[in-house]
Amino acid sequence: MFARYLWATLSAAVAIGTTACSNSTVPARVEPTWEQAVSSPFISANYQAADALLAQIRPGLNTGQSLLMATVVSIDALDKSSTLGRLISEQVAGRFTHAGYRMVEMKFANAIYMRRDQGEMMLTREIGNLAKTHDAQAVVVGTYGEGTDFVFVNLKVIQPTTNVVLAVHDYVMPLNASTRSLLRR
Image: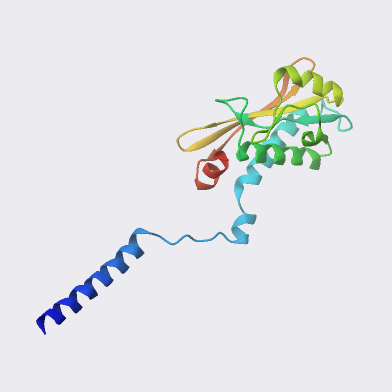
């Protein structure tokens, strides 16, 4: 009888302890909502960066002549990018298009240097040739650097014939779980 009582007590204690441990140490993952997705600041940050560049170049660049968008690359390895860099490039190019500029879609060009996991890269020696081929008046380039708590992004609009910087904008993104996952791909 005592053995049965002891067994029941121990079993109950283990069950309570297991339940308490599982509830307190492993938080349940909360799925993001559509409302949270719509209010995500990621796209807004990239659009604001593009708007800052547009404000600097508006008087000098012709909306009828094309621009090229390079893939935003890692400052530590200029021949590498990530999902983060490619998304920044897509969104900045999209914002320039919204503003009426003719953005050449480089993913469909044959003459551009491409790697499977890196997207389209603008190497210095290729910028002049590509700009000439596409009659581009300027090229938007950028880098990002990962810090402890933030990702630092630098965007520039460059005149390809002279390599003169026409516009520049720096901004910072928090290094949270979402941006970390975009950097690893």
